[in-house]
Length: 480
Image (cartoon, rainbow, N blue to C red; front, side, top):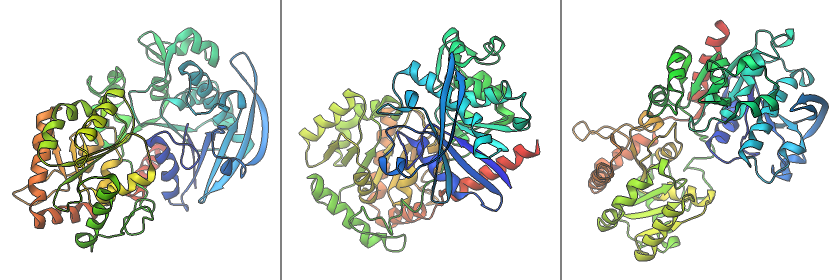
């Protein structure tokens, strides 16, 4: 049986700020338990719900040298939904009100966490075959594994994988400070190892020292080897192209299931959505004060309101979308200018635009279940989960062809009557507007529209499919 240790800064249900937590919380449950023993190690943040902290069992503690002195490393465990979780306790580092705080302090505490994640293995009696790290927060795990820990026979032969969830965030700071904190030797801070553009770079270290690098869609794996998407690491990723794999994220089909979802007005399935889904739409229109009209096309947007997500495009054509008679439902927070843009349109057109400038999991479920279409015009999107949720709920995605959006949404072909959504290629506001209008045209052709909805609902983007691909990667790594 292969032993795999996941090392991550966040994980549902314990702590979540983004999609990384969904991956680390869902994926381990879907491996073949006969072949893989997958466990997860996390920081024991004070901001984890008391409900979970009270159920954690103390295992042991020890002291580890880091940043100039010996520091406390407590180990607790909790089994949840059949997966063993370990929590590294150090209140000095993990006692804040949120998992991420000041950038330099985050670098210090995640350097500590990366070293401790390796150091606890003998104490938990789990000698991993593969250590699977996630994003820059754990970038130093492969570095420590292949340098300071390499002299210990216990760690000999361990393989490392790092998954890049978003290349934009890399964890970089001045070399002198990082060297002082981590006690890593001078030879590691060169441009073929941790150094990048004058700084030390955690993620670069992880990419250099991992045996394999994965990212969260096949298209994104190709994109990050180019200068536009490569965030100044494209040369390294090109050099490591033979060890780079793209595996699209999955969706928890138990939580996101229109047949059983307790948060929506009317449950429905691929067999009966034609008659039942519209009940959710009418209920949401009434709840949000929009015109209750089954004939109008309702478009959902659930997102962080930032430039990365394409809101500068929406800003340019929002007047046109409203003039076309489309209803728009927005949920999310972010940059002030986009929050104000949507609030302004909601004030001017209260029967057409609903701006919900906050986040609510319950409302997000209702939006996916109620809207006819879902808009994601991202500048870049490593994987994206909203389009998968939309397909699951029979809500047609309108996306830009980038990253995971390109991999998971098949563009509509009017001549062959195929596809599961609409897409556009160039990052251009009027190309996006034209695509929304093509979607609206199809919406008025109910026979073809319902056929597209049905195709989308029948797609399988569950974690089961993704887990099989990760199993293949682990097998490949062990064979090396």
